[in-house]
Each structure stands twice: as structure tokens, then as C-alpha cells.
Image 1: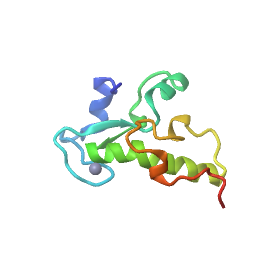
Image 2: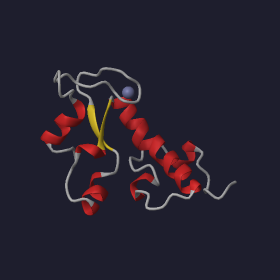
Image 3: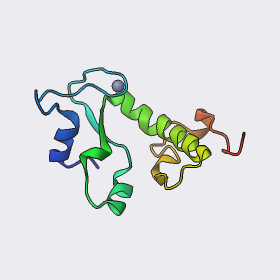
Length: 112
Ligand SMILES: [Zn+2]
């Protein structure tokens, strides 16, 4: 589910120029950048209540996919290994199912 339109606008547009912001991962200016949830919407709303700008970043479609399918699971594992607690469950695994976890070479997480 996308952000509500007013929140999306704040995430993807420069408030001074009203132009679309570049992708925060690769810097590409894409005609219609995605407003990407950092924490999955369901999990965010269960804890916080409503969409907020702070939970979104502008990404191009390619980086959106990389973020959801690859980066979040890697970040989750690194943060967990570092001892961080309270991590979003939605980051633990790729939830989009187009890249297998085996393909990510994540292992069991118990390796040193
Ligand atoms: Zn990008």
C-alpha cells in the first residue's frame, strides 16, 4: 500500500522547488520516484498509528527493489549481530519474494 498522497508528496518533492527529489541511493532523477517505506507500512502503523514522512525515502524503481529485497535483510542481520534490539521484523527477510534468501548468501546468522 502506498503512502497517503500528502505524505508521499513530502517524501518525493523538494519543498522549495516542488521538483521531484533524486533517488537517495543512486542519485538518479526519475520522473516518478517511489516513496518507499523504511519500515513496512503494516508494522509502522501497528506501532505508530499513521504514515509519517520520517518513515519514507525517495527511491528510483531499481533502488526500491534493491532496498526491499537485498539491503534490508543485510542491515537487519548486521544490526542484530551488533546487538541491536527492537528491529523491525519486516527487515528480517526479503518480503518481496523475487530474490531468494539463498541467492543473498545470508546463511543462518550464527556464523562468526
Ligand atoms: Zn536509485
